[in-house]
Image (cartoon, rainbow, N blue to C red; front, side, top):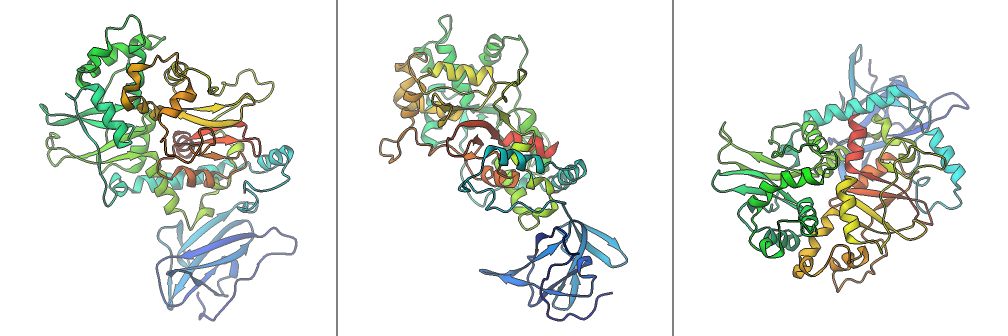
Length: 478
């Protein structure tokens, strides 16, 4: 089947007038001489691949291909091989890799650049209309992502080194939030010494509920009691408090959400989504009864997304879903369009709004962050649930009323006095455009500390929507 391998070059194939799509092929497993051959060369021509600069074990080549299904294989030092990490089929030619290219060419990064001049809203709308994806391509992409997540476990998330903060449930709540602020974390697992096991987590949301309770004139919790009120005592009263705050009168069965190191990444992601948490502890125990547990890691959707991006980095075309523009798909929360009466308003606040209004919005709207905008709805900053721990600094929560301190002042509390940045300059905001590809958004969200992107209008920075890690995973998992 395979002819002897001569030196070759990659030339465009296809009939005159056809749309050709640039496709990069990568062989990341080393070798001295690597060639590419496939159905697009009729298995007779062999295309020489070049080592990447700085990565001599990774070979690549770009070919212009017609839309449709293609098969290919690599010749590595005279031996025909396929990439086991990419889609493949078995047939008369043995095992070969496959790739399906959409009928529309890949969107080049330069087209999606924030600096692209002269792009009108009509052009953006037309781009979105052209980026609709056939349902089969959507399902194929989701299936491949699902297969990857099912084949890898929480062990793959563990870093080579790092530290995890855990708190004893008998620690006073006030002291616990000081620890969270000083360590720069928004949550910590809780350890019960008497039961010798982890029993829950303390998060920024707990601090929000406590502040709301302190501001309640009929509260049984006072500033003095907060000095000695333990985490355990707070957790015992938390269920009743949540029922009081829940206007629907629903019940909230509290349980410790965690995962084992052998659970697949898909199950870990689903646990995070279903329980509406941002992080879950990865806990290992050598005994069946769960005694002597070891806290290995705090897993987040960001870490899982980073694994997806890394795995498909050299085979983006195998996931047509990544080429979609985020403004053209049902992803995230968006400002209702003119004339829409059923659209849910996007939660936003002015800098002069009270901190109490922000905390109420966190609870009632069930959002984790609120864009702070000016009178033209242009983005100034963002206030997140994790920012609330800044009130632990110098016991600011004891000196201020939630309805008397503004968002502006609350943000200043968490700002380093030596910071060279001004308050409302957007340095804390992570943004994207509605014309950005899903792949570009995923790459940004996979960075540590980035949990959401605010979608803004180019130039004016008017807020158009917000996309969170949870939104992306709900879309990817269908």
